[in-house]
Structure formats: C-alpha cells, structure tokens
Length: 381
Image (tube, rainbow, N blue to C red; front, side, top):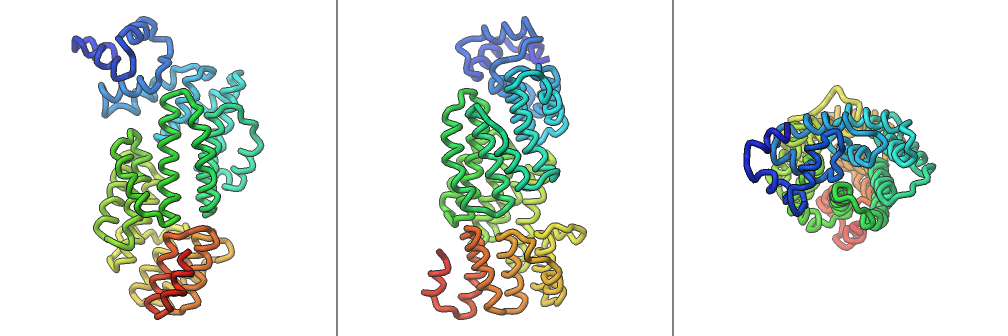
C-alpha cells in the first residue's frame, strides 16, 4: 500500500528517505524488496506513514504491529508507541506475545510495561506497582528510564510532589544513554510533561508556560493533552479566558482520540475553573464516586449557598484521602463555613505533600479574612 502510493509520484521516495534520515532511497528499496522484514528505523517509518496517510496512522501502524516478531527489538519500541497512543488492544497483544517469547530482554520489557498497564487500568494500586517495579532487575538504560517514568506517575497518584521532583534527574541520565531515536524522543517528551506538572505544583508558573514551544513541536497528541492542561491550570488565578482556552484544547484533542483518562482530567479542571469563577459547570458528574467529582459537586453547592455542599464534604473519609485531596477538602470546608481553621488545615495539607500552586487557594481566602501579610508570606513557602 505504501509502495503503491510512492510509485504515483516520481521523486517522492527520495524526499521521504531524506526526511527519514537516510542519505538516499536505497534503504527504502531494500525494505520494498523484502516486505516481510521489519524496518529497523521505527521513527522513520512513522514519518513515512504520517506523510502519506496522516488520517490513517493508527490503523496502518496497528496492522504493522501484528506482523512483527515479538523477539525482535522493534517489538519493544512498539510497546512504547501503543502505550503512548492508548492503542490498548495492540498493546495487550504485544504484552501477551512478548511475555513468553523466549527472548529474555523482550520478556523483561513486557513485565515492566505490564505493571504500567495494570496500574493505569486500576488492577494494582500505586504502592503495589512501586513494589513490583523494585523487584525487577533492569539492565538497560531504556528500561531504567521507563521505570523511573512509571514511578513518577504513581508518585503523582499518591500526591508525593517532592518524590516526583527527585526522579527527573535520574531519568534524564538514563535517557541520555539511549540510542534509539524514537524511544529517546518519546521518553524525553514524557519528561517534559513531568517537568511541566512538577513546575505547576511547585508554583513555577513561567516555566510551565515555556512548554508552549514544546507543545507546538510535539508529534504525540496524548502528550499535547497534558501540556495544554497544565498551561490552562497555570492561569487559574489570573485569567478565566486563558485557563479555559488551553483546557478546551486539551479536551478537544482527548475527545478526538478517545483518551479516556485525559478527557476526565480536562473536564475535571474545566469544572473547577467554572466553579471557581462562579459559572455553571458543564461537566458535573453526580454519578461518579471519584473524590474529585464529589468535591466539584460540593463546590457547586457551596457557591449556591446550599447546605448540601457541606453534607457531601462531611460524607468523605478524610483519612483515606491523599495529601492533595485533603488540601482541597479543607479548602472547600473553609468556603462553606468561612472558618479560618479549615483554611489553615488546607494550607497544612498542601504543604505536607509539597504542593505550592494550589496552596494559593486557602492563602487567598486567609488574606480575605484579614490574616497579616507577613504570616501569609511565611505560609507560602
């Protein structure tokens, strides 16, 4: 199919070969002559598919993935490609094929990516995932990099902001030792996403907004959804319009590809911003049992001076919440009661987990209640 398309345009093969990083079209000619062979330049293959069939990338790549040998190096790269693009059926196919493929290295890759897959699907908890990762003896810089990326995600789920920050330089070093262009690029953009989130939670707003350049150069839409979302969140306290602009961009891309978790994240952020600025939220989910959704419903009721808001907050087991969730819970209770003690507890909870950005929420309310500026400055650190 690809060869047929190239044959329609004299010179296209050479132009594509140059874009793929080759000096001439000879490597492509060898590939056409032996189509049962796997292309050893996965990043180049993606460039080729995206140039010729921009609207059919996933369809074509999923067909290709079903033809590769689970013992070969390409299978490892495809694990990353299918994971990033949430091609879950193909990802599971690869995991199942590689687990018992009699290649020790590829089986090792499958074990690590299986842990990540199970964590995302909720089969295991973040703590269980961390234990499973620590049990593995990882030999390659690629796997060490991905293990640290996985740990970042699970630390995020546990609201351990400081632990997230400590992982990045280690993963940076691992990535610097990777030779494969696609994996190096994919893991690097994952780290940029990590940096964007860490900078947001550390209240380093200018650094978050610097990622706009990265978004424009990013090839993977899944990463774009998170970068746009962080950009939107960075404007929460400054501009409703800018916050909504970037959050809606994130949601639009997530819906286009049905990135379920990103849709939930974007809608949750939009709901918070609309509540915060006093607008009617578009995405309140009264059927959900997620803490964030219950909090947003409570926030909406509080804005309406409806006692149901406090009733909902009191129905939540605070001891079972993460530090970040506790910070929000006490912030909402402060709004409902205008009680300084709740806002102070919110500050305390945000501080305990290393959260500096959302700590601004209770600090703004404490300022409104007349707390001395010097005291607020001390709490801000």
